[in-house]
Picture 1 (cartoon, rainbow, N blue to C red):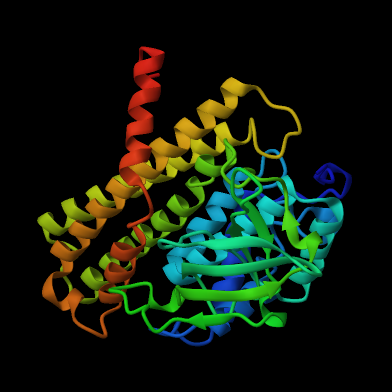
Picture 2: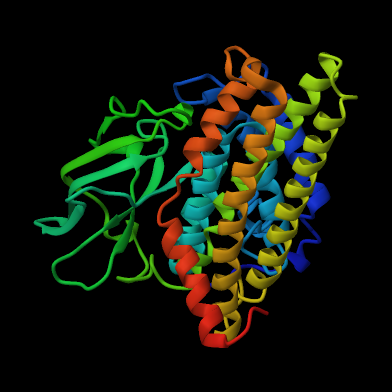
Length: 382
């Protein structure tokens, strides 16, 4: 699909704009994000601040965040800043951005226009792909396509009204995407098994569909599009940005605690805070480099195959590096504050649990192995 050009509207979404929008979002939240249960107020704040619509092109009321060339860095800055406020909200917002990018890349103009209208009306999007032994089958019903099966770890289950689910047809090779109008369909949502160490507010439960009829125009793209590169692996840099925001929040909490307790002059604490600052800054540098590579590919109708391969390679390296950065920052934070930081209601306690859980993203070993294969095939590391 051809995305409208931002230049015609004069709208630019810069890293500074990202900080301003997220600051407005954070100020709109009048109470802490709940320990569990869907963060309704925070999602409403995303809408009020304009962040929910930011991934849409200017002609659709947004800023083209992540869709238009040159907008990957502000997208990652925005995701990082939302994650710094709360990781569960960051996870939900990242899924929303991912879904809109998939509709923009593989959907029709009419599908994207409807997605834009739904977003403006306050509907939040998501991508539900994880499944157990059985996923969702795409069947031929008497009046059109029918879905039957189950997905697991569906973020925002029971609350997200516009999720994209991946489905499998016996007649087609490759997964197909289907946009569910969840508020209009008889879906069975079950979050009872979602009792995690952290990220409880993401409400990532199971959803079951029993011969649920959907509209033919809710099928997005062609079979295999969902796993098409560079979007599939290259898009992983989005959740790495949210995770780095969680590490930044740990640094914030550590500094606040040390100042409040009068331990900010201790040389060992000073050294640990210095190490945390270096780690966080290196994570930001990784995101900038990944954004530069992605901007040579994402949002462009034609791109060089080598550039696409490099974007995937940078995304794999970035998510691997940021995982290690987050783990190291977390260790420094816990050492600095001590057991007091692991006792409720200290804010560090929840942030540690949330980040520990969120870092368990799928297939980290596969991402690192892909980095190794790429470097070995190329013959050098740079």
